[in-house]
Image (cartoon, rainbow, N blue to C red; front, side):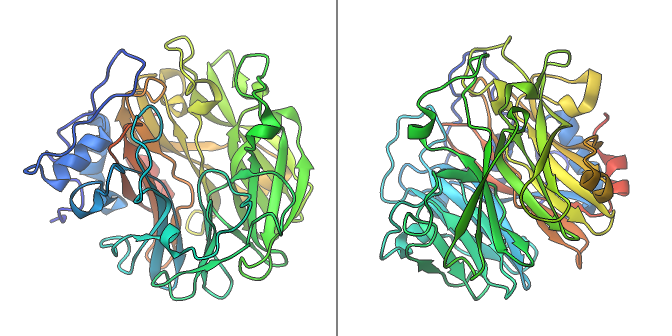
Length: 459
């Protein structure tokens, strides 16, 4: 019998509302008598086919809430938990997420409980979690000119310490997330001269250069409201790579100019067998493919593990919906930050990517009235050679609604945790609406991708 944390037959009964308006939808806050399971179902809004998948998949694919904005975890106006990133150290999963009034469209103002860095930990494979710790409250000496924009970047150093780069600066935990220390000045203007960047979700660990934090320019003064020819926001085609050889205390940086097709946004990094691999959302106009009405993700790689990186558009896709609505969240924004990792069971590099407004991974039968989380894979040798055709393994989750219309908000699977001993990968996502509420969830999948692919939704 599955526990109450996992979704069983009949449990997923409440879908998010789908509206025709282009304003964010509103999910009514939970009534005092509403169970946590019912509230979680409402935030997720899974399609019938996705519910059926979870019901028949058993331990191969499990979904459970981690942190929901209700009860003691609903603090002030901050009912939007999102953008979780996680890492494994020892036997502990350490997770950091945002606690905000809203993603966009809401009218609530940040208050004393608002934080872009809330940490919690699990010592039993994600079944139970500690009380959240607001890392913002641990700052005694603010980091002047922190070079991180939005999001958090997390990783485990070679000594097992957890390091997380936040908009408040860098934090380090040497006891598997039990306690934290803020490192004043780290990742700030006294160490780095380049612009603010939105980093990828994971600090990759390089054998010579230490912790790596790749990112893209997000400094509004640098962008100056520029637009591409198709009116999508202009982002410079350049990659900023920051690295620390002393566990996050001090940082160095380098910039690489990229071809326009390689405008990599929040790149997820992987160091594997001496090579450096990245996959990212792509905001270059060349990413758009008119024939399929999709935006292609970009991949970057270096066979020798360091700059310069080469770039190519991958066949990992997200659906365009510009003909359905006028919104700042269509166009390249239909992509999202990805999870990139090596699966020791399959021997392949695997990517978990969101289609915020459809299911382009399904091919010709794609729909534009949903949001999907899709699994792709490629042979590491092929990636190293520059091949960019990934194998679609299937859809892990499907939600009803369009993010471009503000009906739903969520996913962001970056910085998942692969546990080869347990034979699983824990993917952390968020789900809800842009004005809130929104909660953090754990999707645990078997590392037996062949078995999993046979269970996943029809392609």
